[in-house]
Image (cartoon, rainbow, N blue to C red; front, side, top):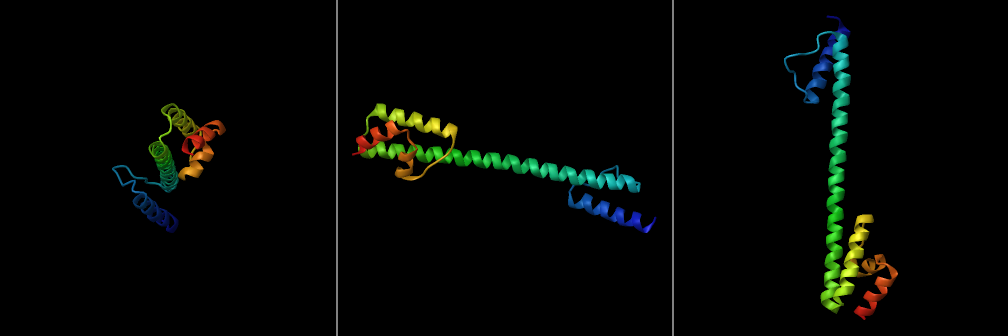
Amino acid sequence: MGELELYFTSFYFTVTTIMTVGYGDITAQSLTEKIVCIVVMSIGVVAFSFATGSISSIISNSDSRAAMLKEKMKTLDQIQSEYDIDRELYNKVMRAIQYEHNQSASAKGVVEFMDELPTKLRLEVAMAIH
């Protein structure tokens, strides 16, 4: 076994161990097989990591969007209970919030909440509050 082949054998087992692919019953025998296995294992781990990260990101974004919708609905409920706005107006605003939530994300607090409403609804809510 030449020095180069010994180096690649060591590197092959290091990559196999680090990438937690395992040794299995079938292992690479020749230098070419070891090089191909190193490349394939590296690509596989990178692809798996990328897929896992992407899925985690999607789930995280979904959770944060749901939390934003819940916060808006809580603010609307607070406005409704504090200022006793008309039920029809409440339903209009709720539908606008749900529509906006399906289109994009977010605001916090009454001022930002009001800014996101369509102009007509914003005026109706402001009149009901004051």
